[in-house]
Amino acid sequence: MYELIFVTSNPHKVREVKEIVERLAPKVNVKALNLELKERQLDSVEEIAEEAVKEAFKLLGKPVMVEDAGMFIDALNGFPGPYSSYVFKTIGNKGILRLMEGIENRKATFKSAIAFCSQEGLTLIFTGTVKGEISLEERGEGWGFDPIFIPEEGGGKTYAELGPLKNEISHRRRALEKLATWLSSTLSP
Image (cartoon, rainbow, N blue to C red):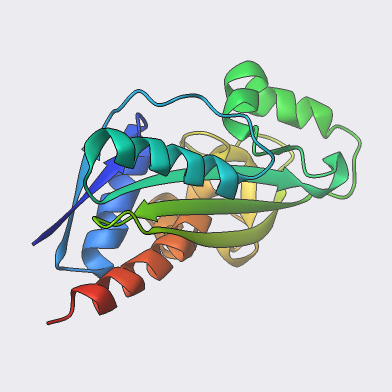
């Protein structure tokens, strides 16, 4: 069994990542670790994930992954983008909805960047995106921006309203599929 350390403090991400990766790559066991990493404010989710995974690998010396995600709203010129975590903590869903009041173009994209560092120190980035739109109000029980993001493939429901079905179509799922495929091909006998 291949142990992959997932560095995060977010229990919701842990649950999603374990479920998706261990189903797609049965030889992989995901182990979560809450490691205090430097808070980064960079211009892309890929840069944030890559810098964080390099720091984590330097501290652990083992195969490790880090995930960063952002919601990019067209009418707000891609805001909050790579600052999504900070924006959510600061103004939350209600603040985003206030910023979107009276705006007809509600198109948005959710993007996940997974940075993986192998035992040898090889760093790879896997991304996944989902297009959708911002709802008019919070709907469903979920975390982060899930109650206000309606994916195109969600039948008009927010991520939060989709429940476990979110893991079948999410931006994180798409990035994790690429990681799981790479791991499975690398771990094949």
